Image 1 (tube, helix red, strand yellow):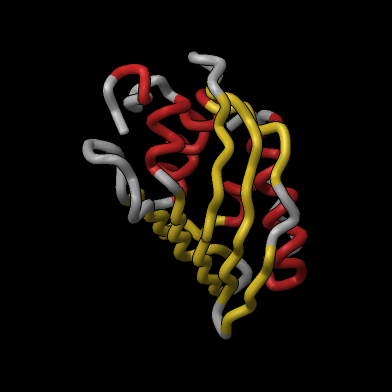
Image 2: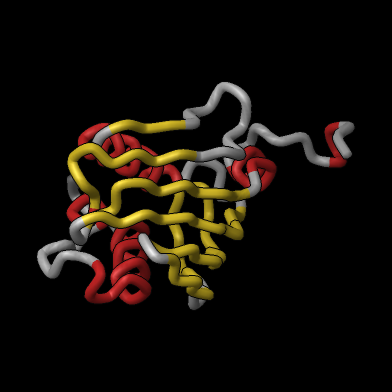
Length: 145
């Protein structure tokens, strides 16, 4: 997987948050994942992916998504350590590459670690922000609320 700017910023932020609880060899987000990692998106819009199983599946998905969004900045996260991982609160500023529309999102991520790798990543974000950025949302001009 070729790591673009969005994925590089994402991985650097995670490394800063999790520090030495991650294996030292984990540089990219994919490196941070256990082979049997699970990633979930509880607030995904209807018809979107809600769960990914396995490092290879997550890597493919992240490569596709990172090509659709260009993140310019992640806000410094608020970090809540847990016995087996972290809860992170952050936000980002960016644009959807196909539409040029803003993608300014807030995230809460619940991350579970085991043996220095991410085994579970539950990502909470606003699906309306995604839909609007991708051009699938209903704006007030189109009769939406």
